[in-house]
Length: 387
Image (cartoon, rainbow, N blue to C red; front, top):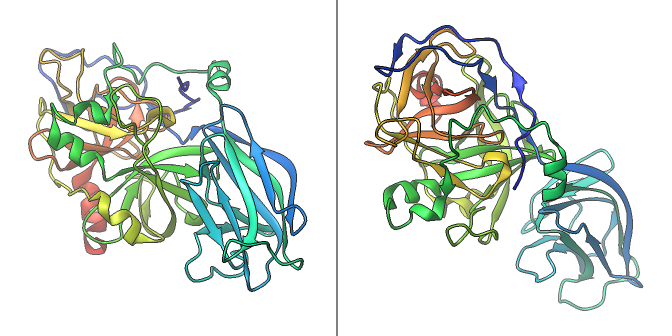
């Protein structure tokens, strides 16, 4: 199991204005759930050419491999393909993304020396130089892979023994999203619009579609600039309750930051290839201050795991997640609500949804038991003209 990453300690909050009756106002200092570190960068030496058209980069037990391509030279008849060993996840480049994205090519992140291709889920990336018709490449074509980022193995996560537990309130009650497919079909259906964000190939947060247009929300502390460095993973979730393998993942890149705010800790952004993610649906905002005691749930990717739904809370009398407090201080005065739904690093940017309206009432950003999210009524006021 992935360990919970090191968190940035925030200042102690003022006591909440409204607190769940019968609950003690005493609380631990909240922590800002920064982007979870989930991988590392490594130098590699791999080349593909007409005489050696395939290179395989294996990192046993890593959960993704992301390649940096340099010195790409392609004849007009050729293409570079980066895929998993089965070919079920495949990214194609017929031009040089470091210069301009060619029509029909997969997205990529240009750098000063080449480009980062989209990551491949799993522990092996197969880099293939070939003709567009699948035949042998031209002698004029070649490319080098000079570095990768790859996900930590479970053992490496365990060795990073700086795990924090203060965001797991009591027993860890979150479950795989699919566990609620039959018992809570509405909550399960809403989870589809939530995605994992992989930043710079080695850290992550959570983000989600908002409204009918090409718009997504996450935290300002996840990113506020350089959106092209952010991969957006939809459908990173298991097919069976308790499963360990992901469904087929749809990956795009963040495209443009449309609005960001430090105090309210949000970033509104668009993505490339929007048509690919439209089928996952969207979430609506519920711009009001929720009631203390109102049922709620959180959907996200805690510690980079397959998508989870935090719906139950062993700390509450009803055993349901519920709003614990409202109008507590976050980065600014009275900007947050509190709750004891379980979260971890990587949950930053997760939507907090009302259990009655099934619309978003808060944007998760702090751990600390109670955990905290920014009031969506305040965020809505800032972004309503851009949705």
